[in-house]
Image 1: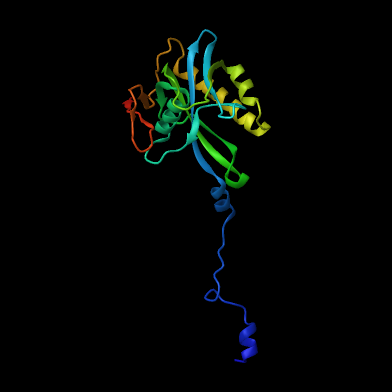
Image 2: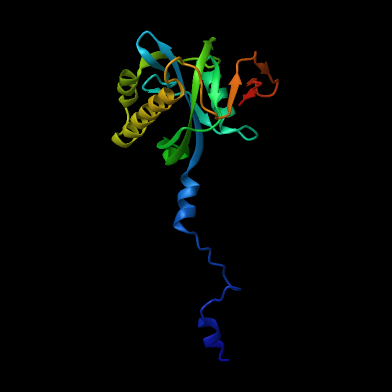
Length: 210
């Protein structure tokens, strides 16, 4: 073969590798997995939800954080509820809904976070482990008002649906007397926390109820 032709020949896969990335893969790279504890009680104003303020104090939200390796989503949600709001209670093992929101990532890049939401009936409250976490009980409609503050229309609608679905789920569980009558597994986190020296985070022991 002529040397000039050899020089101009298009490179093959052995000369240079071309990596093809599917659109779905690119989307997954932008996603993160989080868990939220939708904490509730039966108060004087009916069903009330416990919301916490973000560290900046600009918005109200559910106790929420990243899924933890080695923990189920329910256990991770219970951990967030304890750390951010001092919650002890009965956490449903199965997620009752999920939603997504945009989170500011590294270098100012937004990424889509998928959030698994778990219901938690609060038994008692201790002091939160994290500072600057104001916690307050709100009835359902007022909780929606607080969750709207400082959020986009899409995030607002997603959180309103969480409240609506939580109310329906709670009514299914407590039709008359407040007793839990469904057959779903639940994990109870009401024991005293044990702190690890490495991460200074509580390890909550749980009891599976059927």
